[in-house]
Amino acid sequence: MPSKADRFIIGALDELVTLQHDAAVPVVVSALVSAAGVATARAPGHGFSSGDEVEISGADAPPYLGRVVVTVVDVDTFTYAVPFGTPDVANGTITATYQGDGQGGRRDNWQDVATVWASVIAAAAIERIQTQAMTAAIAYHVRIWDRPDVHAADRLTWGTRTLEIVGLVRTVQHRIPFLELDCTEAD
Image (cartoon, rainbow, N blue to C red; front, side, top):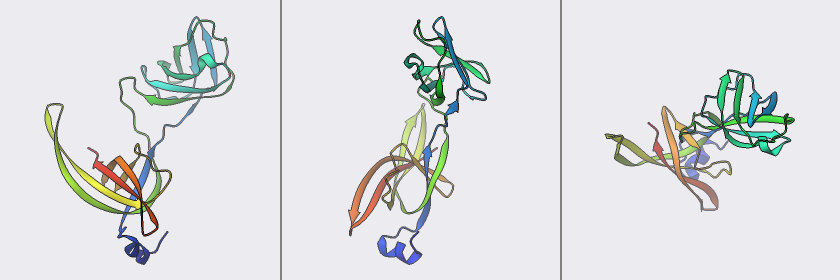
């Protein structure tokens, strides 16, 4: 990590922010069988809800694979539709990974990736109507040293604030690669 003196010379990266990825954790499927067009998966403590969209991977039989909508039987078992004629048993290192709630929503599973030096500037205050009520948001411009693992789907935490990345541009100034991030403060 650069020294405090280096930060001021390079471009006033004088705030610490934490980069976070939303990382859905794969759940191990210990058994996967099918009968009459319904696959039954045993995945102890899976944490899914009926209607969730889940990505099934690692099975040796392709009809079991892909993004599916699950129906929860109990805390250890869920089912989903498969084509008739699907092999009775699937083998392999099978996992189920939460993708969404089936209605466009998603549970957050943010994990810290790195704490980095940044320049954080409040760029604008924004008011908008959302669900028939006026809401306010603050837009920020954040500059960090370039990192290949930063994506628009990531977010930053800065003190008690959560900043959602809405756009990013890679730039070079004085032969130093930076990431310019446009962010809004999350509600």
